[in-house]
Amino acid sequence: MIETRNPATGASLPSLQASTLAQVQREVATAAAAASSWWALGFEARADVARQFAARVRDDRAVADELARSISTEMGKPIRHARAEIANLHTRTEAFIERAREACQDEVGREGAIQVTTQWRPLGTVAVIAPWNFPISTPNNLVMSALLTGNSVVLKPSEFTPRSGALYHQLLAATLPAGVFGLVQGGGSVGRALVEADVDMVAFTGSIATGQAIMREAASAMKRLVLELGGKDPMIVLPGADLEAAARFAVHNSLNNSGQICVATERVFVHQDVQDAFVEQVRRLVSGYRIGDPLADDTDVGPMASEAQREIVLAQLADARERGADFVIEGAAQSPGYWLSPSVVRSVSDDMRIAREETFGPVVAISSYANVDEAVARANATRYGLGASVWGPPDASTDAVAERLEAGMIGINRGLSAAAGAPWVGWKMSGFGYTRSTAGMRNFMQPRTHARTVPSGQ
Ligand code: NAD
Image (cartoon, rainbow, N blue to C red; front, side, top):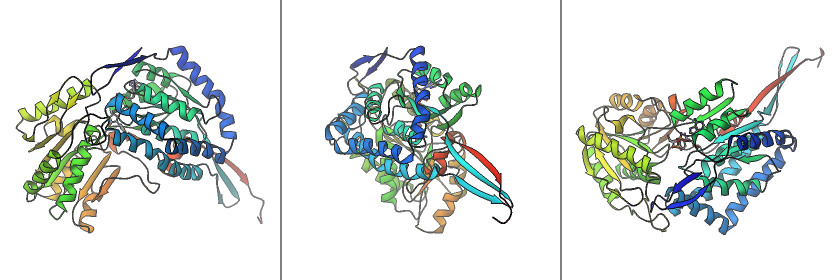
């Protein structure tokens, strides 16, 4: 059984049956049997299915509301943000369709008398394994990429958000031919069984440790992998930055979803000359945040998703306190439920756990630097490399700092974005392979070449 609790109250939610090994294998066999006819339908038919799903979640208020409430109830996200997660599905679908259409095009090249056609074909059946922090949009990114490129899919949602995963699966499966989209439920052991079943690819979003386990589990059959992993995103504030805009971003991107976002701002490096003014702006903004019932429309910060997640953050805060960090605002834990109010910490040093490990909690962690070389070196001194941002004068000097950062996605005087067909990508241990963009879609495909000799004169 899968047992979950409402993080706002600590009350048990109805339990759910986990999949058995036999059920995992059956779902995979069914999806594998449906794969070739799904590809044979052709790209436009697949795109129509994706559009039908996107239109349903946009136009049917009752459906969108049910999905949003399920997210809030299972992992504590404020309902406004849960609704935005659902609304975003429609916008993203069109972008996915355009990129997948390009990815599915064969390419013809010629060298002398040799003509080579590169065909792009689906890998077959893709296991999608998802985390709990965006219980619907994160799995949807991977599921849509796999389906639009002609693969069948078996999804395993997080064991913390199984009902949101089941609702999403039910809605999308209803628009698809039978068997193309399967579902299994459970924790790590069910995830492992899915990776070890007869799937051709694993598309995973989650922690580095689980990504490493999946790599090992997938090695025996060399299954294709896309792994979107954790982050420790730095933010560098240069002396000439618009401090108010920078402070607003630092606060929003540290506290949104209680900091439980892979591309949350986890380390703020502020030039020593503007540090005090910046910290004061941050303090003022955080004091205005409304903490409360995730189902209330005006809530900015809800509870954390689980007791375990809150324990990690509390341990990092205790370590920072012991090592001499300065608490501008000290977050307080409250029960029942997994409440932890926001903290603002300054004088964070690089040896603190809060500077080295993914926090995934409602903390604005600030330290100061004396010169740009130091800021860049400290920002890069991590095994993570997901996102980053640089705030400075809108000129080449700020771009030059961005150029030196070891991160897959960098925002310049704004947060990062994968808009306009850009990839969603991590550097170093924040990812292996990537998604979105035409090249990202092709990570779900196998190239196959056909060479022929062209008769002379043609
Ligand atoms: P997690 O790694 O604990 O779990 C993710 C999923 O993997 C769950 O469904 C879990 O049941 C499954 N799993 C666990 N062990 C497994 C195994 N041995 N084999 C197969 N599957 C297994 O991560 P989480 O706590 O759910 O999510 C938080 C993490 O996700 C954070 O590190 C965050 O940064 C990361 N994340 C990354 C992105 C991104 O785009 N890079 C996006 C969202 C979250």
